[in-house]
Length: 85
Image (cartoon, rainbow, N blue to C red; front, side, top):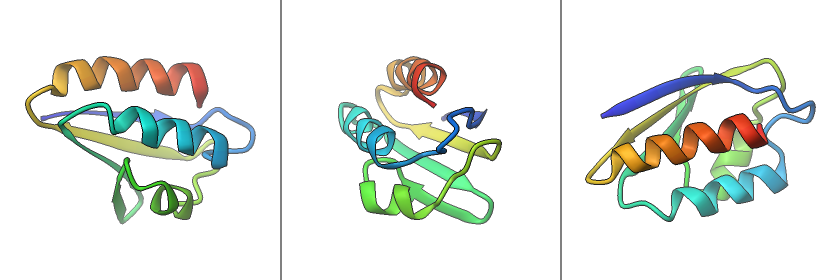
């Protein structure tokens, strides 16, 4: 299992466009990818649940990756967050 924390830098937080891109990216991997904000944990592939987290700028999320291709998923998602959020 791999995990990392990320503080959202995007002024709008995780809004529709980056949430859609994130869900699409997460679906490319076999691994189970979860995002946690506070007490709420959801699968990164579930767009509506992702938007329902209502993550704002300056808030921290934890991304947990577990599965056969977790190393590749970790690399791709850390890069995605740095470039898009």
